[in-house]
Length: 80
Length: 267
Image (cartoon, rainbow over all chains, first blue to last red; front, top):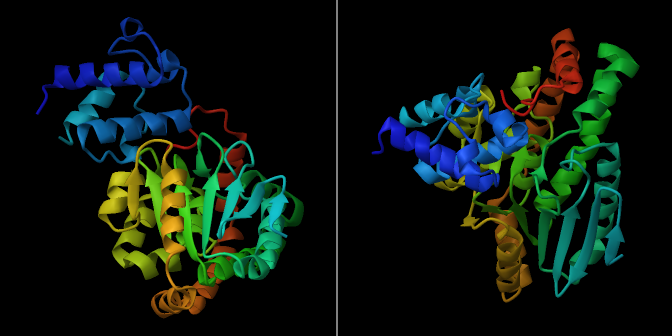
């Protein structure tokens, strides 16, 4: 099982790759809607990518109010 | 009519396979016009069926298969007719769309929904009328209607209950959560999971294979195993119309329609 820091790093890498944003431009506490320039439909894409990558099921209501990568990674970590 | 090019959908018949492509921007929201074109399709289906063995439903839009009912249109109806009269208008509309869904559900062809991305609400219900769902690994399924104070109205509850059972319906309906293709396959909803952008190719390969089977036997097998839950479908229409007439629904729709939030598709 990855550590919290490893999970966070994987979330950042995956988001950067999927939305074609340079990885160095993303920070753990960034608002991912703004940093990635995505809307709610694209957020569902990100959620699906993360679920497939980590082999977890993350109900989308758990994302309610979540806007930064660090909190997102902690939600995933809690399901691993 | 072996080909049709509409504003919301198109169809063609090639080598015994009817392909219906949804292409109404932004995400194939099912409007009155979509319904009219679906009615045109089912009107042509009997003739098409003489030269076909399979039917594939898919979307040409990148974002997904279908986001469900056109909620802006539904909100406009409430504004136009008022909350009591809108229930009568909605009943007539739902009875039309149920007729379309029931014809596709029961048609003697083997039917396949090839889905990707957002497959929500009425879009999910449209996929559920098909015999098989083939999904790419980025598809997501959801009944978000409770967020608006409604239930699914296009026959989704009885069909999902028929195919998978009451517990799955309760999970999806009462939580309003979406789930991915992996989960959908685990519970038996999705028959094949394929890579991104591969669902139509896989559906065509499956449909071609089905062309090798005796049509009479395939149609008889389908009739035997796939009854239409007519009584529950009618009860669903009744309940939807009863719920629609409440002020809470108008408020929920208003919030969705007027939202400039970046998260209208998240709970």
